[in-house]
Image (cartoon, rainbow, N blue to C red):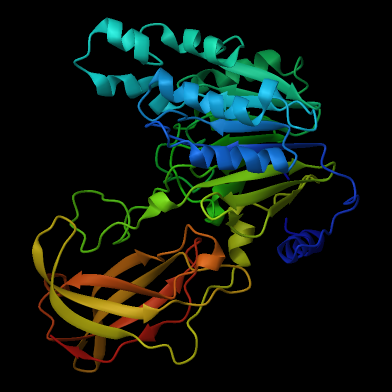
Length: 459
């Protein structure tokens, strides 16, 4: 589709340095639009971050605002009314201060249409008056609040570009919709068109293990259109992770979350999974609130990643040329990665004390502390692999290996953590009498930097 060439390398390098590299750079984008997902408004007064994001889009030339679902947190009409009010407050009558029209490009997510079920025990009259999707409320609420017909899959045109959105549960009908409307919507003319739904198209962003994907229904539909660009949320994966943009037979982009980031499983400070008791608390990822501004030119699409708590960049722009190459395919990007590394002389410190595991049980624990690894020219630290090595005769024998996320992996690089740590229960070390710990930094594709070691530690 859209192979890393010298041109693309220079474009990305220039973007990172703040200088353009593509032809026609003096000309503005043909269309720009803001992208958000998983806003999760719940309690009155929690819309401040949404207002910040909308103001950023307004002040940076957006012609539309796309929200890939979960506008409301518990499926309440009042929550979606407040989200709409934020939009109309920022864009009165759907217009920016300079008079340009700004299109609303939103879809329902699972929290919007299923959240009413969390109010079980309430009578029908109450649910009908308060829930977005109780009974036949879904369409009625949409039309009243957004002043437009509700369609399970809608299509709009913004400055000559087609946008399509499928509300939660309707992605299964996307293939039929595209086939029926391809000619009318000019979807086969090679010009990019943009699609949004709440769950990730399977086997695209983050790969086959992505949480909450759609089992492939939209992937099968979109792979017939190499000019399709899909935006999806649901997983809350951080867009600092380079796996949040993917190219194959079409392009797929993960949209992060404007409310909180969801860390991957199998990290000791990440999300719970499979009943495994972790020794560390989960990271405070609710401080990560993300979105992006997309700029479409004749020869490229630029994705500006933004964090809306501190109002800072989340990394170099993703610049994708519209020349039929696939620079954002995982394999060629991963092949060029240089892993992060520790500074010379970096030391690992080990201590032992009684503490509490995540469930609050008092536990005999070993804490391993180390300085943060330094980013490379291509990547920053995503997580660390820490291995406990028991010494048997002349062999360092691994007795336990765990991973721990960088405490700042989801934040702007200006907020990079200065150090990291991980906690082992002594019981996890399988009766070892003497251990030393090896620590390796990893970037998001899994490339590992050189390891550093602690001194031998007697248990």
